[in-house]
Amino acid sequence: MGFFDKMLSKVGIGAAKVDTILNSSLTKPGGLISGVVHVKGGNVDQDISHIDVSLMVGVKVESDDESDDYTYDVKKDIDDDYTYYEPNLIYKHRVTGSFKIHKGENRQFPFEFNVPLEVPITVLGPYKLSNIKLYVKTDLDIENALDKADEDYLEIEPLPTMVNFLNAIVNLGFSFHKADVEKGRLPGSNYHFFQEIEFYGSRSRFPKIKELEVTFLANPNEVNVILEMDKKGLFGSSDKYREMSIPYDGSNFNYENELSNLLSQV
Image (cartoon, rainbow, N blue to C red; front, side):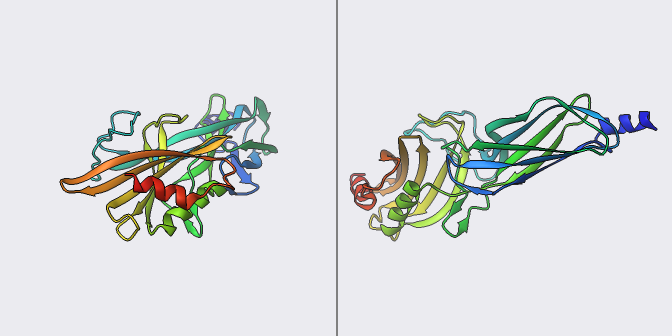
């Protein structure tokens, strides 16, 4: 009986199970994520190499994506006919090293880590950006057997500086359209993806700006903002790019005036 149990456990039947319970699924860039990894032994004793928890995000990939690098003045045309989402690692945390989980045994492993400041946001005020999938994936690495995994979704609220900047955009008459996490690497970023938050501008104070796309790149000292504007012209539309930096605290920053002055120069 023991022999067959061992054979089956190697393909996941009767093997150890993993379940991660987060203390909270809501946080901010730079905020704390904590929880407990619960491991329940299966029908046989098993050796566990390690447990990792990884912060993951689904990145939108277009059919013509070929390069991971974007510049502000050159962007590829997008073909919406073929789009898929691929999982990308944001951060990995080692919960524990090797141990043995005995048959039927229950063990718990607490953990905590800080979310990187460049994490995409998934909540805008009362609205959840349901197309942005951001989650904690728990990997139970079992020696000579099928690895087990568990996924727990997170909600990431924007930093106060980001909230104030987005409110300034709305106050200038722009209307929220959508948000995506797209493949590509922007200068100053640590990742091969970036988030774009897109607004329509037809009813704004700047009606020549058809669309305004916002990307935040935060660090401990400031929040850098990259703006892409699709501007109407006599010979069609053209994309314009601008950058601005806001102190991390941002309490003395005049968001609406600074943004209005910048857009007026485009």
